[in-house]
Image: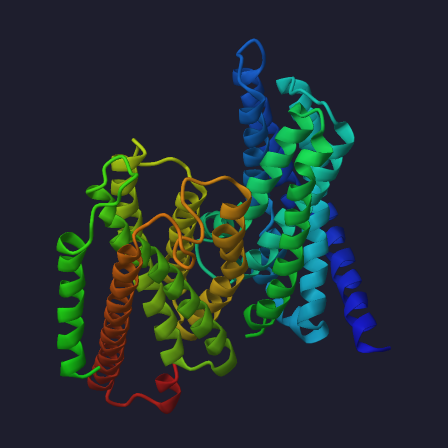
Length: 228
Length: 233
């Protein structure tokens, strides 16, 4: 087996193992989804029509909810390894790139699950306008992936430090801000613009570009975070 | 940095500051031309913030390669100075904005990016505070600095060019409306401030080294039979 396919296999194994664990305990999923649903319901109470809150505010609020819900759960994949003291075993069995790719895949799927529940609920409860549904699906998909890409390595850092919960939010925010700014702009376009694709084209490019830069950077530094 | 260079730096910075008020003409075309000269102090501070951030990233990268504790101290010193210059740039920028644009804060992309830069530095210091063990602290903070770097490049260089901004672009390198005397004063002040930066950076390192030596001394005094294994911690 050559090197490139070996880390891919390792990543799949790590991913499968983490989902198996997650489906047994449902800690990360529970935290993330409950946080999101609670905040969407709370915002729905306060902001549903006829409150007259503009769609711009609703777009920003949607991503604030998603980001903070993500903060509640995305560091879980690494924290659990430290808590159960399985990190060393994983280090012995799997290359660091394999671990990172597996954890990144886990976090990405976690984000997709979160968005699949949050976004429709949000559209329903807050009666957000929707001009261009297919664009919104693409934006949410790319945006949630970008958030997972930006914060997975931060989760690995946090797992090694004290006061993990508070720290993860503080450290994630600056790194996650570029995709957040862009994705809010694109969401606004999908809700309000008539030629939404043209308005959001630049945003989608920037989002993809951001992922293309942050993922290799994460892989490079992850090796140093992960190895003792 | 020897004594002569330090004295020359002091004279240079004072001289440029005086020149900015006496030699530099008021900037015509601004709402209050007299107050506009603050840009010659503001822009160098902002530039040094980014220089410090770059220095921090370079030393972080070097640390991960070499695992030399002094390199970690250098990265930390650069971050501390970067925070200082970020605050200076924000304060001078707000004064300018209050005078010229009518409000101290406009959520201009460059204002946003400097706040984000300060947040990164703040997060960096929080992370350093949250890890007890020295080598682990150095490793994790270096990794974080390198992770935050691409995000900051995006905020500093890409964002101001896609969102419209109150700040002009390319005034420093192209011939534009401002008096060329502005460019001369601005770059002179930048040179002086850069020297101050280097000076403060080295002072900070000396403090760090002295602290480490004291700590070692203290440990030797309190535990006379310290084993070599204890030394490595």
